[in-house]
Image (cartoon, rainbow, N blue to C red; front, side):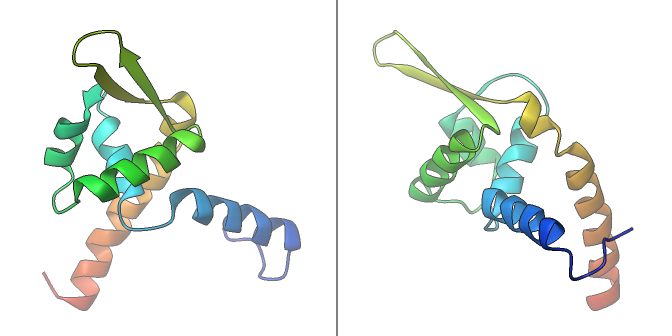
Amino acid sequence: MLAKGGCPKTMLSISDALQALEGKWKLLILFALSDGGPKRFKAIARTVNGITDKTLSRELKSLEANKLIKREVYDTFPPAVEYTITPHGLSLEKVLDELHFWGLSHRQEVIGK
């Protein structure tokens, strides 16, 4: 059940969530990392269709700043970098599930497929 529209604390928490997850890519990146195990940059790029390297780099930095993913650099030549979803990022599992189901319903409503 949604909180009623005028609660300032609710508005602030929704604003915080939207700021951390803004844009069309962040939730898709988190979903790509949610199946467990670290992934390298190119593996994420292949999974998230249509994202450019520049955009992926920017979104990964933002997700890391919001403690939703962890970036690990290995001391190799050239340096290997892997990304994993954090427990804080995994806490969005229910949100992703609900977005998935809502998206299916929305597609049916709007497109009829």
